[in-house]
Image 1 (cartoon, rainbow, N blue to C red):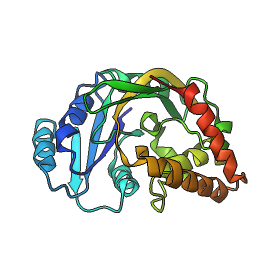
Image 2 (cartoon, helix red, strand yellow):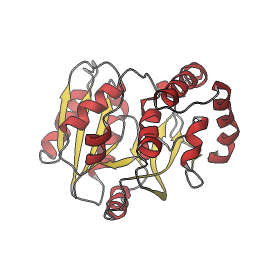
Image 3 (spheres, rainbow, N blue to C red):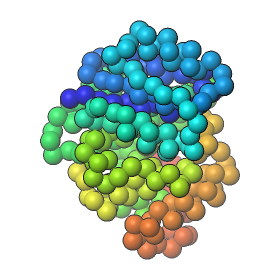
Length: 249
């Protein structure tokens, strides 16, 4: 069972090598890394090419302009040959070397269509500052704008073939809309993996204050309505009461 990891990146030369290395150091061997570079102007391509030469059978890449991160991820999905698909962005790393092994073990159960787990965040100095746990998550929380952390999602390729790719008209909430299709509209069976899967860097688009407060809420409300789920916009504010439950120092 091959696992495809998609890395969307642009001008992340300072952190990209650590991302690639964390994939290549996974103990599960049947993997491929698809790097979708958004026409970087730094030395990202040199880093990518050097690693591709070391692992020509495991690394594929393209470099061209894109219209956003979801456009890049969709390009990567179309390039995959794996049975299972997940993402690891160009400034993030796997939390340990056996993450994909544990994903493969869980997905060996044919009754499971996707898995998700926990993630942590680190500051610029590399210190972990937050931890997001999905241990108590249930799909009813989507109605309040709460989804499992997207970097922990690994789904069968057949899922993407059936329910579609990420909607590129969203700026930061296409992954939330995708979870709605996964968990409510199509009721796909899943399993929570009780482990820290990815360590993320702070400072991405979705973590900036303006986008967290305004763009995020607006797009999540739109995603719910587009999938036939009628909610009061103010109900999305309830998720801030859950933040302290799912996220901790």
